Image (tube, protein in one colour):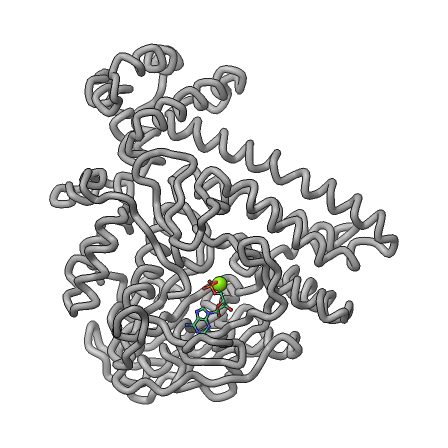
Length: 519
Ligand code: AMP
Ligand code: MG
């Protein structure tokens, strides 16, 4: 993939005052790597040390024939890692965990979780490893984590492995989310292992190297709480405050402030998902981060036609995680976080519950504010317009879109054309074009700004039919469609010639899309 290549002859990435340092020294010439001496990558082991009860020391499985499929060069550079070295034999071994930097302490993390509403006390990293924390050149601490690196003590019946297709899927969708300015874990690389993974059919195996603000989840707190060890719970909360919500440390009630920080981050995150038509698909409490980053791209997908009841996951029979249910489900997950935190909120548990309920009430308020502000921007409307005018306009539009099953993403770009004076392409999107005329008149009377609309409404998202096409080709060894898709979604707002297929709605014969998790 085209990406920034650092041009210096040597690089040294500094840590931001941590006790351990990330040091990368690579002698190289422009474009060609001359790796002598070998680089040293230093990883912290803060989680493993501070929360040893929740960390099982573990190693990745050997891979018969590792082959780098895709490397996120800009991200590598941002992390102070040399992309040229990461492409070398030793670099690839780091990316699958079979070569561990001296002093690093890889662990499988323990967590619990409510899966589709049912509590599972012991989930944990069944096929993943936290290699350690990287401190980037700006002092930001981030987890370096692997997915598909072999069975761990949390694997239960699973094989501990991952297939090329789903790992590339996480790569593409997380790249898209980042480009859409939505907080997300990042994908650093996908490496084919040369091992066969058995699903419905034999598939090529892969390891995804993932980078995250942390992998602390609501389920991490549920696990700590269930041990009955309040000291562990407090250490976990302190760790989370230090990494994600440092402002909470100075608050009158730091643990309540931590909870409020997570509520705010998730309300904003889920509003952003809704504004781009993202359906996460498996919002279990083990898949909700404390940092507010989107995590675990399993059965996720973007809406084609607008319909709040849309469900893609093959196992979500009840529609629990349907597009339109996502805010309510996030709130439900946060209530589980509040329960886990109760012993830290107040000595009197009745008071603790009252405090938690009050703070959780902030979710709706924050979500509604973020959603309304986002919809105004999508419609090109001024921020100072009366909410009493904007809200019904938004609601009426969504009802019209749903009634005609209009393609959600492309609609807002064609609507900008209407703001420039040409309404016909917008009208044609509706089964009865006349049905939208009244709405268009009301909207245009508010003076929408088409250029502002084009700055926030993407042209390119990872459309389901294109993702499937790209992954099938990549699984068969042809990565060209994947690279084209990545090219489109990593600059989602700039319409470019040659990418017309990537901007268009799914063909009518694409049918009902189904996604699978645990893949
Ligand atoms: P997920 O649905 O990906 O969030 O995973 C839920 C749980 O199942 C986590 O504890 C995972 O580590 C575990 N898991 C998923 N797939 C596998 C697998 N192939 N082998 C072992 N554990 C797995
Ligand atoms: Mg998960």
